[in-house]
Image (cartoon, rainbow, N blue to C red; front, side):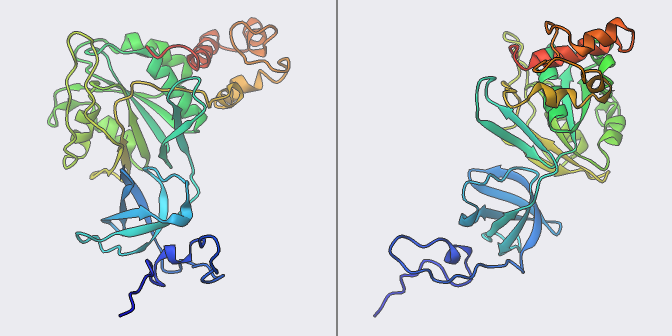
Length: 337
């Protein structure tokens, strides 16, 4: 009996992959994927992808022709194969649609390798506890830089307002014009301020980012009761929270036309990929004032003849706004903690 040694049938994407050396090409034709369907990646786990296709959850792997092209949460993709969503069914991702936004970070400030956190999100929600643990300006500033660089709208979500006055923190960021919401324990859902946060999330794909222990998973569970994200506690000695979310997860909001993406608690957020000229472009009023800056000016506090200093001296720029921008600029290289 002659065994069939072909690994793939004519219906498999891998059937059309580049042949090994000293073999004839099976065919010069490449599949058109006319029958491929659209999906959204909602989580990634060790090379397996969970997608939403036509309102149902399916599982998929990346097809070999995609090579090293990364697929991340939020990606809009095209898939072929079994998209029924029944147990054991597995589809293949054959195409990644162009991304509208990309939220990136590096492990450290001198790390040349960029890591894409989420694709196609329009809003970055920076979740900060006003106490327990104490707010760390390093992460807030760096997250704002990443949001502006990615052309995403930032939103500050201040939790645990029953433990500390939010005004102390808000006064630092008011000059930047960053919107905010304030939440605290109480209300029918256990969180006062949840309705205002939900209004800010409506119609958007929003990434929730913050240190462990700030209440991020508590917010997710209140917004999406079926999420069942594990809630952590803050270490009384170190003042830091324990990681409870181990992977990014995209969830549809049940009471609003929007999505939220819960991310693992951040311990490092490098910004080696952010250039000063990209950051100031997020502030059109300040960018206009730097048109006559000397070549190579970074617009930092020690730059000679910077247009921002000239504008402040002539009363054309708000000194607090310039100072806040320069703080963000400095956050690219200052320690996170």
